[in-house]
Image 1 (cartoon, rainbow, N blue to C red):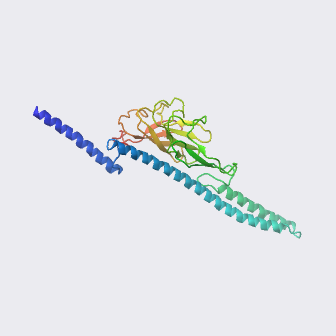
Image 2: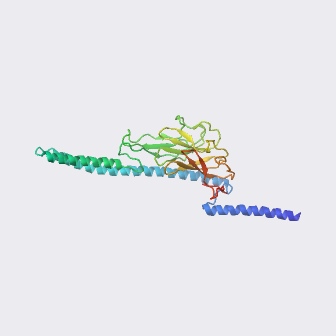
Image 3: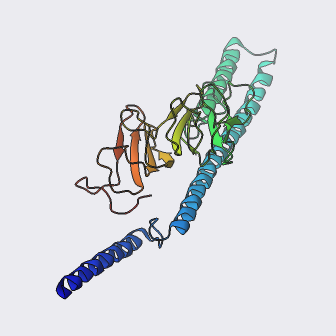
Length: 304
C-alpha cells in the first residue's frame, strides 16, 4: 500500500516535471515567458491583444509606406515630364519661324514627336508596387488608415484615369450589401499587396449568412465588388467551432492567407486544444494546418 502511494506520487511528480520542461522548452524556442494560456491566462490574453494591435499598426505603417513610395515616384516622373515640356516649348517656338524649309520643319516635328513619346514612356513607367497615379489604366492603391474596433477605414488613392484622384475613406466592416456590422467589434485589418482585398477579424454576426458560432471569425472584403467572405472555415466551408480566429497575412501574390485560430474543426484531427497556424487557399477554399512537425504531427503548445 505504501509502495503504491509512493509510486503514484512519483508518477505525479514526473507529470509535473514533464509539463515544466515543456514550458521551459517553449519559452526558449519562442522567446516568450508567457507563450500559452496555462502559463498565465490573464497575461496571455493581454499579450495576444497587444500582439494583434502591433500587427495592425504594422499593417497601417506598411500601407502608408506604399502610398509614400507611390507619391515619390509620381513626383519624380512629374519633374522629368516638366523638363521635357520645356524642351517641347523650345521646339514649338523654333517651328514658328517663317523662313524654315520643309526639311527643317519635318526635323522639328520629328523632335517634337520624340519628346512626346518620352513623356508617354515616363508616365507608363511611373509605377510603385504595381500602382500608378500618372498612367491611364493604373491600379488603385488602398491604404489602411484606421484600426478602430467599431469602424475599419481604408483610404483609396486612385489612378490618373479616376476622378477625383483621392477617393473618400471606405468603411470595410460591412456586409456584402453595405450594411454596417452588428453583434460585435471588428479590428486588426490587413491589406493585400495589390490593395484590392482587406482581411479582418470580427465578432459581428451579420457580415455573412449563417454566422451562428458565437466566436470571432476572420473575413475577407473585396474593395472592388464589396463582397465579404468568411475565410476562417474548413475546406468545405463549414464555420469554425470551439474557438475564435484572428488576424492574418496575405501571401505576396494574394492567393493564400495565413491566420491563427483555436477552433477545433478547421482540419481533421485537431485535438491539441491550442492556437494553431492555418493556411487558407483563397482560390480553392482548402484549409491546411501548418503548425505541425515534418511528419504532420500537431504542435504541443500554441503557435502564433
